Length: 227
Image (tube, rainbow, N blue to C red):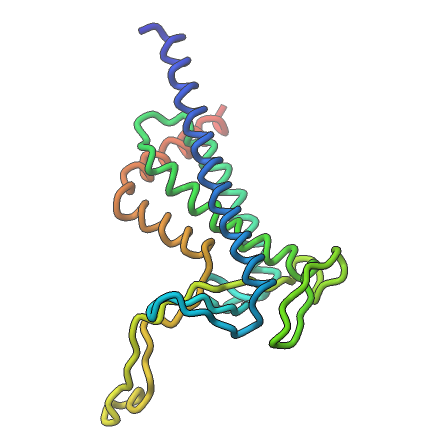
């Protein structure tokens, strides 16, 4: 095979991988936003709907990171997410031409990128386009500027709740005695789960691909800087 033929095949593979990443990311972002819009406009804060005893749709909002955690300032979180998405897009674009990377690696990378992007839309836009009604009223979609907060100040919508089981700790135990414990108590969304599944796939099945991708991308970057 000549060099030009090899380059052509590499280009076709990169194009195919690129379209796969775009498709997976779009599907996740659309599913995430559609589910959030539906819950936001059909549920009031705190309302839940039981699908199975171990799975409920429960509407809550938070200002923080995945699974409702609140660790940093709102603007730091929002712009941190934006920078993370920009980095992932840049990184994935650079890896498209790297040979021997498996399809699953690109799917996992797309899931992480789309998950990070999904919650950004909430933070940037939701404060501007939704009101903040008191229960049992549902939120209403409004023209920009009529919402409950400014740009970049929106709250993230969570709704996936899996209360698998709960119990009360024995009273004789120190610190937790007599307290109720619930597993799994976190409420999250499709974007959160996409990030977690994508990271798990990379760690469990595609760690070698990830290493090759990082080595290739940053070695290439260093070579370009040295020229």
